[in-house]
Amino acid sequence: MSKVLIVEDEENIRSFIKINLNISGFEVREAGSGEEALIICEKEKLDLIILDIMLPGIDGYKTCELIRKDNPQVAIIMLTAKNQDMDKIIGLELGADDYITKPFNPTELIYRIKAILRRSGGNAKEDKEKVVFNGPLSLDDRSQKVFIEEDEVKLTLKEFQIIKLFMYNLDRAFSRDELLDNIWGEDFYGDIKTVDVHIRRLREKIEEDPSKPKYIETVWGYGYRFKKV
Image (cartoon, rainbow, N blue to C red; front, top):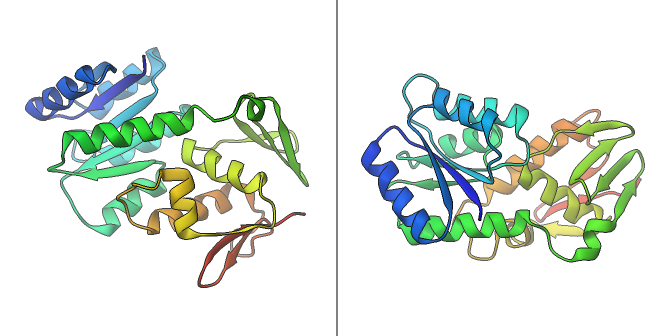
C-alpha cells in the first residue's frame, strides 16, 4: 500500500483529499504546515507528497526544497490556487514532479498520483539488473542511482526517469511531446514547459558547464538528445 502525505493547512480540503485517497486504497498521513511535514518525512518512508504552496510559516516552495535535500526519490505534487506559469515553474525548479490547480477534480488527482507511482516503480524486471555507462556517467537500476565516476548525483524521481530514458537511447532525439508521453504519461494535463524545466535542472547537476552541455543537447525546434561520449 502506497503511503501519501497531504500537506494542507485548510482542514476541509485536507479531509476531502484524504477521503478520496482512502477510498482509492492509499495509506494517508496529514500535515497542516511545512514544519510538521518535515518532521513526518524524517520519521516515515513516504511514496508521494501532496504539497500546498500557500502554507503558514514555511511555504510550500521552501518545504519542497527542504524535503528534496534528504528525500530525492519521493514524488511531489504541488497543490496551488494560483494558475500562473511562474508558480508552476518555481515549483518544478525546486523539485516538484507535477502540479495541480485548485479547484480540482479528485478523480484527476488520483489519476495523477497513480501515474506517478506506477512510473516510479519501474518496468521490466531485467531493467533492474542493468548498469548503463556513458563516459564517466553511470546509471544503476538496482539502486535507482546515477553517478559521475564515484560521486552520486542527487536526482528527483522525474529527473532519474528522464536520464534513464536518455541513457538507454543514446544519440536519439526525443521531441518534447515524446518526453512528456514517456515520463509523465499520455494523459498529462500540464504545460510542455515542464520538460524544459527538468532538462535545465538535469544539466545543472550533470554538466560541467550547463550553458555548454556535453551530454544533453538541444535539438532546436524539436526537443533534446543525450549525446554518447
